[in-house]
Image 1 (tube, rainbow, N blue to C red):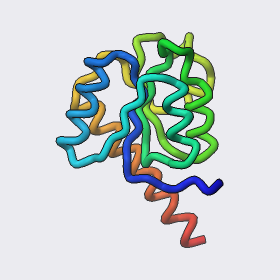
Image 2 (tube, rainbow, N blue to C red; image 1 turned 180 degrees about the horizontal axis):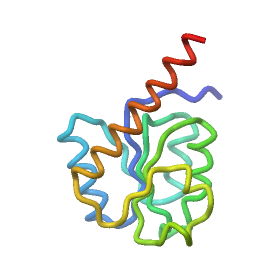
Image 3 (cartoon, rainbow, N blue to C red; image 1 turned 30 degrees about the horizontal axis):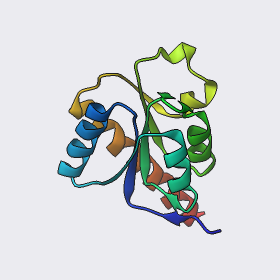
Image 4 (cartoon, one colour; image 1 turned 90 degrees about the horizontal axis):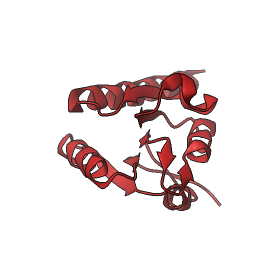
Length: 130
């Protein structure tokens, strides 16, 4: 199965108010979003799609998002880690993402998303030039 590129930002967050806040903020900033509240839902969505970037909570009600982070990393999709857990206590795969403490203010999240997408775009540009 071919995985299609999406212009969406994947939000994987099981706290409804935080998920809604992130969704609202990103939509108002001009992004399209896909909100998943479980690890299983995110893996199903990712089976056929790649988001442009993602925001991941580490611990979800149906388990950790470690496999989602690994999948995104293997596909070179940038992700932010928005967690209340300590960075040093998190599984190593999460060090591949940009770390934001929870809660994070809107400006920090938007700056991190824009920075991740710009870095990805720059790397893709360099690959096309090679």
